[in-house]
Image (cartoon, rainbow, N blue to C red; front, side, top):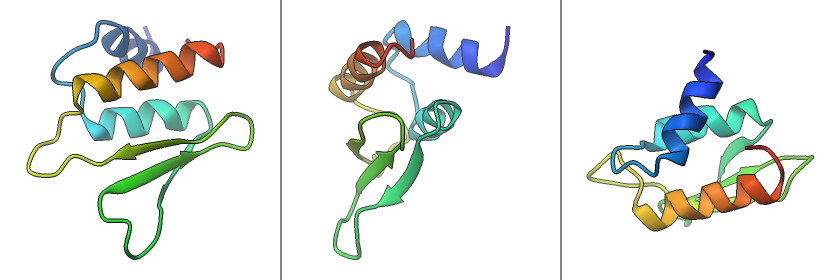
Length: 84
C-alpha cells in the first residue's frame, strides 16, 4: 500500500489525530499547492489546484491536529471531485 493510499484510508476513518502536515502531503498528491492568503491572513491557508476547486483551511496553532469539521469538509470536497 502506498503512502497516498494510507493517508486516504486514515482520512476516511475521520481520526482525531490527522495533522495539518498529513493533509498537506495528501492534497499535494492531487496537485494542490499550499499558499498563505497574504500578509494579514494569519492562520488561513488556501490549497489551490489548476484542476480542482480551491479549499481554505485554518492552520491549527498550539496543536498539530485538524478539527473534526475540517476533516469532514476535506473528505466531502475530495469525494465531490472524485479523488477519493
